[in-house]
Image 1 (cartoon, one colour):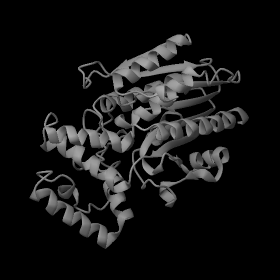
Image 2: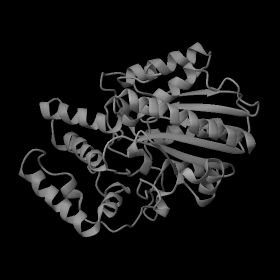
Image 3: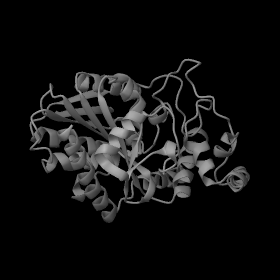
Image 4: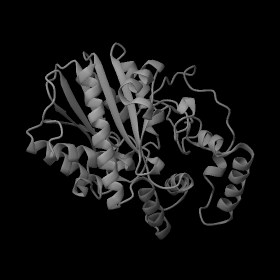
Length: 358
């Protein structure tokens, strides 16, 4: 089972393509024209469909929305293909696998894309009236200090600790991760226009589900919650959240209601899906697997962001930071992978049943 998972993006893509070929599945490969991978390779969002193109019910399984988190979702997708998990689909139901939505981040072990954009904050109206007007707690300078091992970071950490002491960890998490559009060199930056991945993904959804009546999305993520546990985070409109609860029950959490390990966020992929499929019934779930302690994960994200804006990726410090960010989102441990696979199988089976009964 652990052989489904990979050590890098080229290996993951190779496993995905070979697994599709073994089942005779054609693959649509969308080339990212704006970037190359860590090994100089071309970068692709690959798409495979199991079942008829005309079904009224479609299940999307997505990996790599947040780049480095793609190791998890890719492993699940490869596992489903190699075990022929979808061999007995109902006649009116199909499955679409989207592999490496953010191939740059996957290849470079980064959560963001080639423009430092968090794709799950990028699906929004970028006109002046569409951007959020949230209070800026003015913590950006402290999140991106001038050095990482010297006095500037020490002073920044002191200021962040004071913020947490005054406002609490949850408020800090929301301020940092909720999505921001002012600082292009900052963490959780949502961009100033739709990214390549955003536009390519929208086209894939249109091509595969434009006429569908009922659609479910399972978007695989890592980095929040208890180690190895897959939290079912419902994203999107109130109707989408209600639809998801009908299928998955009380396990579904809601960031806006304060029941999730995730803070409320803006510009999510789920909102983009609703714009493309405005006539369909949609259940959008971010399947979020826990890895390390929240403080450790946020520190790794800060370090990676600092590295690409202030540091040297090839230095010893750079290599150490890259190892930390990878571990924060992909614990390369047998137990963790087994938990990922078991939960993914359970949740995907429930999604198939929900679609089948719809």
